[in-house]
Amino acid sequence: MLSLGVFVSGRGSNLQALFAAIESKRLDARIVLVLSNKAEAGGLALAREYGVPALHLAAGQFPSEVEYSRHLAALLTEHGVDFIVLAGYLQKIPSALIRQFHHRILNIHPALLPAFGGKGMYGHHVHEAVLDYGCKVSGVTVHLVDDDYDHGAPVLQQCVPVREDDTATSLAARVLEVEHEILPRAVQLFASGRIRIAGRRVTILEEKDII
Ligand code: GAR
Image (cartoon, rainbow, N blue to C red; front, side, top):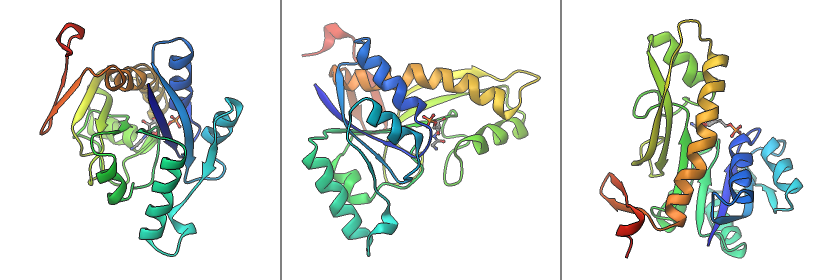
């Protein structure tokens, strides 16, 4: 069973979706640690309600990136984390951690990457940019994390149609519903060994093809 470390920066509705999926047995994993770069993140309070260790940890608390990175790695080891989910986490992950957890870190992004991604593209900024561009569809991407923002290979993507009368708020709400469905589904694909990765191509195996 996967032992998840979930990183959050905000309210934690995607974290809630992971807890719900575990409770209803759609996701065969346990959440062993929740980390946030924001002390006041709703996701930390939520984790505590579920009795899961929830810690505030920010790069700025350490004299150097190397020490921050070492401390983070030690915490993940101490709690037995073997897979990381960035569920609305708005700080860059240290490169050393990305190497240590190669192909074992997922991020969720509220648009169809590679459009509307990269530094500064988070939360409502994404939906405003989608509407300003005049897009007819937006969506959700769950992807592997590499060293560049929003750049790793997609694992699952799903479209959300843009409506004529959409505001950033209304579009964000419909995108979020899809996020809550596909993030647990993506993690479950890893938990059940149904993912093969070749370069940027992530293949989802049928259960009968798993050896
Ligand atoms: C989600 O919409 C997630 O896709 C987005 O932050 C929100 C977090 O909501 N992430 C990004 O924009 C990353 N670039 P939540 O705290 O309720 O899960």
